[in-house]
Length: 395
Image 1 (cartoon, rainbow, N blue to C red):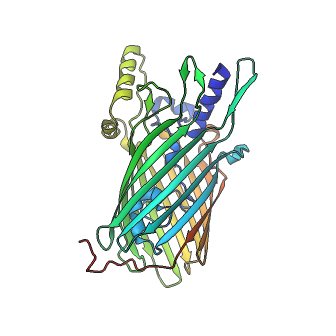
Image 2: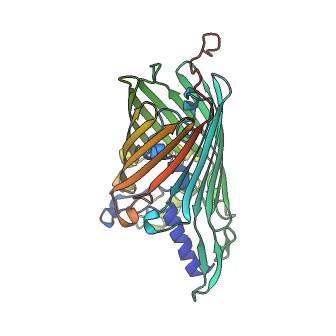
Image 3: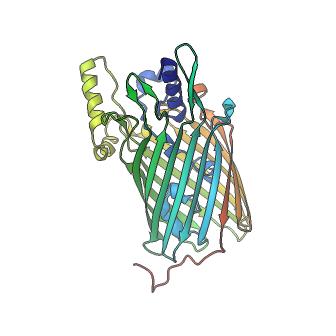
C-alpha cells in the first residue's frame, strides 16, 4: 500500500472515531480516550436517538439489547423485532456510509427471555492509489457486531441480563504498508446488566439500571500481538422517572451517565525513553487491569458522558421526544440536542429522530449532525402479563 493509500486509511480511521480532536487552544489540556471499533457505542435505534442517547433505564423495547438486556423481561409483548437505518456523515453528502441495526427478543415465559441483535457499519468505498495517483484497487471497509443474550427476572421488579458478542472489523483487509499486511480484526466481548423496574403497575415511578458492556479482548489488524487496541468497554448507569396522570398521557424523564473503561494512552513529555516505556506498558497491560486503570489519574468527571431525555406518550400511540447529550471538551466536545417522534399503529411502531449540533464544528462536529434517522419495530403479539406469581417467583 503506497503513501497515498496510507493517508486514505488514516482518514478512514479518523472518520470512524479512532482518532479524536478538539480545539487547538486546548491541546495542552487534553488526552482523549480512544478505542478501536467505536461503532459499538453508536446508538442503534431512533427512539433513543431522539432522547439524547438515553436507554439504560427507559421503558423496554426490542432495542434493549444494546442498552440494558435486563429490561426485556418487563416488556408488554412476548416477541418483538426492530430495525433502524442511520445515514452517516450525511452533512458531507456521502451516500455509501451508513449504520444498520436489527434486534429482537423472545420471552420464553413470565421470567426468562432470550434476545439477539446485529449491527453493521458500512464505511463506503476507499480507492487505493500509488504515489503517482494511479488507481490500484478499491475496498469497501465495514464493521460488524452480532450478539446473543439471556435475561431473567430475579424478582417481581428486578432483572438480570448477560450476553455474548462477536466483533469483526475489516478496515483494510489484504492491504500492506512497509511490509505489514493488514487483516480483518476480530474479538469477542460480553455484557452484564441489572434493571429495577418502576413500582407502579402502569409503569409509574422510578426505574434504574446499570450495564457493563463490551467487556472483552483487544483487537488487532496485523499479526503483531503487541499491536492491538482496546475495544470500548463501558460502564453505564441510568435512572428514569415516569408520571402517568391519566389513562391517555404518560411522560418520562431519563438520565444516563457513561464512562469508558479504557485508560488514556500515554502522552510524551519530551523524554523519549520514558514515553517508549509508558507506551509499551500501555500496550501490554491486561484487559482486566486496564478497567481499573481507567479510574486512575486526571479529572474523572471529565471522562463522563451524560444524556438527558424526555418522552411524552399520548394514548400509547403518539410519541414526542427530545434530549441533550454532553461530552467534555477534553474528550471531544460532542454536545448535541435531539428531537424525535413515534407512531404506533396495531403491531407497528415507527420512530424518527433528528440531531442538532450545539457544540463543536468542523472535525469536532457530530457525524450525525442534521441527520434524520428512521426505525421500525414490530410487536408480534399482544400484551402479556408481566407479573410474577408467588408460585413462580424465584425469590
